[in-house]
Length: 584
Image 1 (cartoon, rainbow, N blue to C red):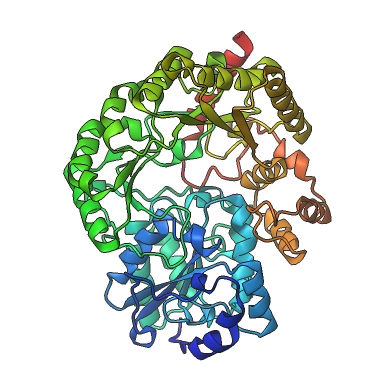
Image 2: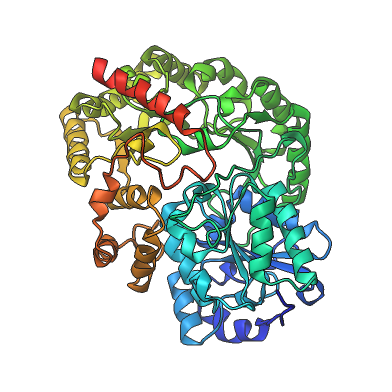
């Protein structure tokens, strides 16, 4: 790796780009708490890329942690680069302006490292689009020594083979400590004049959490990698002065992880099996972080993040401590991921601080039988008791999450989604003789890698269409206008299943889809499923067959070498669930 010239595009951006985009605040940088260094004086430069627009990217906690973590290191600069929306891309391409960073307006190709956060299978075409807009060749084998190292991180790295041909390196697991070790090694290699392939070889040999596709080629015995884990979560890196966005972000709040890992083992949940072990932050540390972030930002909500906040051992004490400090500052507390069996105990305390616009409950399956199959033990009795307590405490609206297409599901289970929601709404009549307002989000089951249900196929799209009709018909039969249903896009769920459990040959499909115009596939107004169907067919593949593919226990899975739980452990969970399916 050689020292490269940093191309700053400030004049071009201000004259030829910003006056012509619809929302220039997405691209100007300069926000409160932004960190900006002189790139030309740094030993190593990193572009932290998020393959979605500013409002989404600025809500991502992982990106904020890495940004602050890297910029705390001497001689290393990290700057943000987000996907330009369609209007902005048109201007960039039309005027031959390279994609640039927010802080220094440096061209993407000027950086030593370009890192992407991979959060969903349907952000992949945006990754290719951003590379191309930055003047960087999309295939790793085609890049020269002068082009940046392309690194991927985030949840999708545990099933990254479909993107393997585009990346030089993937970081598996938790990034804040791994990235420090990684950039220090790369910096030393750059200063020693080592070539990229030499640096990558050293990384692959030294770090078990690093996956280098050019070395770990398919068809060769693959050394299993492991996830990076932050052992001392109590003292792990936290940005105490988060950036305050210019354009309102989706989640504009103080976000604090209170624990990592989840004691639950829902058999469909990838994070539950990949993010281990369970670790907690102390109440004192969390309150200290919240105070510092509030002083630096003025945000009016503190969000306590985890996979299962109800399992934080000192949640009541934490909520009370935050309430004591923040109640007179008009700062609310957000508690996602609460389980109903704990909500009953917490509601009297929560009512003091938590905004009561709506209470969210992830029910997942409408019957207790189906919940046993998916290993989410939730009794209807507890659900209704929690709902009644919530109504009494002042909540008026619920948001319920259900998943359709789970193994062992019957048509009665689908109908019960409506009946259960209906009964929860009518329960409010016991309190104030009114009907509760229930918003119901229905998603379609997508089998995920590294889970017990990763071995089974997805239901056909026609099944989901039928399920949607059953639900809406049942709502009409009950005359339940107070129930509002929102359904996930079926085509998108099919794509997630087909891509998420795929192997390296899907790199060709993803490139074909992108070249045919696919981008922002997570956005309803942009997803074009026929483009994707055509891309699969071009490579002799059927998207529906791949989505519905079942894996046998003795098959080598495309992801089993990429972190996660032991295959035997997952198979035991799978067999237990199938016994329940066959016995009930």
